[in-house]
Amino acid sequence: MTEGLRDRTRRAVRAEIAEVALGLFAAQGFDDTTVDQIARAAGLTKRSFFRYFPTKEDAAFAGVDVTGEHVVHALRERPVDETPWRSLHQVLRDWQQRIHASEQAVASLRLIESTPSLRARVHEKREHWRGAVSEALRDRSDGGLDAFTADLLVNAATAALDTATREWLRSGGTADRLALLDRAFALLGPKEAAGAGPSRNGRQ
Amino acid sequence: MTEGLRDRTRRAVRAEIAEVALGLFAAQGFDDTTVDQIARAAGLTKRSFFRYFPTKEDAAFAGVDVTGEHVVHALRERPVDETPWRSLHQVLRDWQQRIHASEQAVASLRLIESTPSLRARVHEKREHWRGAVSEALRDRSDGGLDAFTADLLVNAATAALDTATREWLRSGGTADRLALLDRAFALLGPKEAAGAGPSRNGRQ
DNA sequence: GCAGAACATGTCACCTAGTGTCGAGTAGTA
DNA sequence: TACTACTCGACACTAGGTGACATGTTCTGC
Image 1: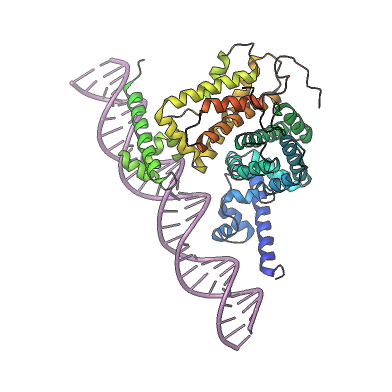
Image 2: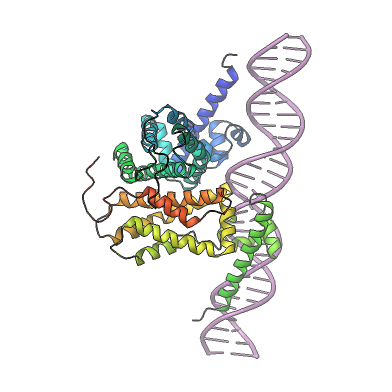
């Protein structure tokens, strides 16, 4: 009924493994760190490591929410009269702000962004929830948004986010991430339509 | 001086391995096909397979040019007075048309799109040449395009391409890919600026 | 045509990520 | 106390990928 001791210890162990792993990744790189090393440093076996994380990559993602669970939820909370594009903008803005608040999350993000295999994994995860986000978007505006346009908006939004993140990394973390995101969203906003009018995209 | 027999046989062997691999992938799925199987079916050793392809994934990419080498080149050929967005549109349009012409390339694309690990790999490859494309774009319009905007345009263009491809797959291959791509590019075109005016992005 | 370099291939040994299984110990419960 | 559920280590195994070595084949200069 209550939390249960086992669940609590399990989460605590998980968090500790992630912390140890992050430290090793930062020190000697992701690829040059073996699971065995992490496990030993955390005081357990390789086998047990995999009982806490399905893959080595997942240890790097602990702490950062890349599942989009939150995005979908936040999207449903936005006012209905808001354009889809603006909703996406605001939701990603919030997400970025939340990430930026945690020092460890920023470190994870930096590691991810500088490791090819991890970046690939991000895309994989994203594709997973992309459908859900697109659907949530379509639910909000009743009928006024077809699947294709919704998909396009979501893809464009992640493109904006990626570009902003990339530029921020290029600046060495000094640039204003939110301003970059705003600029990206401003430049990329869909022509018209996509707002509320059901059929208005005739201008090939 | 001439082609050299060795290079020719090497390319022939490579192509044959790829063909065998494609067949096995299509028949039993990418993940359920081992390198050993492919190698044996092609009449060589696992070790030799890896002398032709750096990874198992790469065997699935033979035949499809995802390196963007061509994109960069084609971009430099576009008329200078064309807007960056339109150039990207045209170049990707050509690329898609070229792919569509080859039956095998379409098969590869279908396989890739339906296999998570391969999709991830596409993104990885894309990130690799994204910088080069962005740079080519910036070279064309002398000074009128900053790195951030160029990156954004390239990212947005791939978003358009992805969305079109996805919709096309969703239609079971019946939809008109080019029309979808056109529609995506039309909806996503950058507000203004990005054309030639050096400084005009003041409207937060 | 031949000697030697350059190259291709198979074999073997090895590393790492990841999984199945089993047996011992430990926490939670009646 | 006895039963159950969960956790962990130990062992073995598969699969992708690499390095080293030996053998044969092709190319090149003479």
